[in-house]
Length: 337
Image 1 (cartoon, one colour):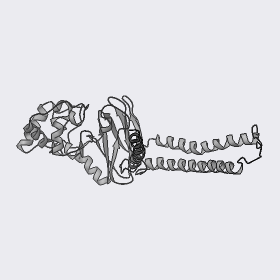
Image 2 (tube, rainbow, N blue to C red):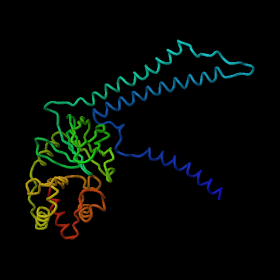
Image 3 (cartoon, rainbow, N blue to C red):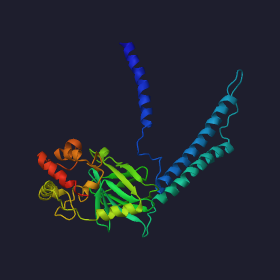
Image 4 (cartoon, helix red, strand yellow):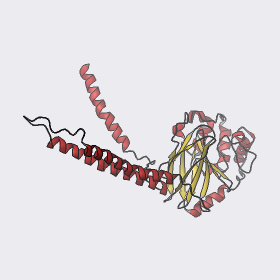
């Protein structure tokens, strides 16, 4: 029994470090070292500057330590070496040296912190309001009549300013490749800015524990060419299209005359709810459920049948038990592009 226990311990000592090592090799797209904006590039430059300073200090200290161990090791028939206690030049030296190292790190760090809070202004700046909800992100484009959820669209090469707040608890907005974390606090607005350098899709995540589904409060940033972004903006400013097929028309009736309209808004209809995501252009979004499922009819059917089973703790407690009604609602929602 004892040998079995010892063997299990040895296996554990091998497997646990191996698992940690493999997790470090993950291809997670949320990589803070892969800077794709001026903001994250600034943070990455500071990080590597501090890392190199730490390496230089480490090599100097460890080199001096190893030299002292070898050079002044105790030998046979040798008494105590000369003591340095009270040596004023040495006391001054090893007080000034750490102070210089700290200054080397502190000065650029403080400068960078101040730069991150210098909110840019000007006619070319794109300002977007970000609201943290449980558990999804809402985006509003002031002056453009566009409200959307989870998917943020911005143009490449243009300065973007996010005005971040929350309507419930404290969240934290974070897109590792584009910007640092900013808390979303009820009754308070924090700002975050960045200029994306490349087009693409960038993953993000709530970074502050905000409730049961904190880990599933995800987001995506779509960085587009300016012309493509303007086209997206114009399309999303339009009211929802009218359904044309009988099934979609029945779905519209179920949505607009049922409980859905009490929580969701659809521009151009009588749906004015603000508890759930705006559905005006729902079908053009990449995900549902606050970013956890691809936006497909199959996943939408699962969501409508029992949203709490997929994302426990979210605020949608309505269940559509009738399969025919679910299909009609899906048919209508698929027209909202």
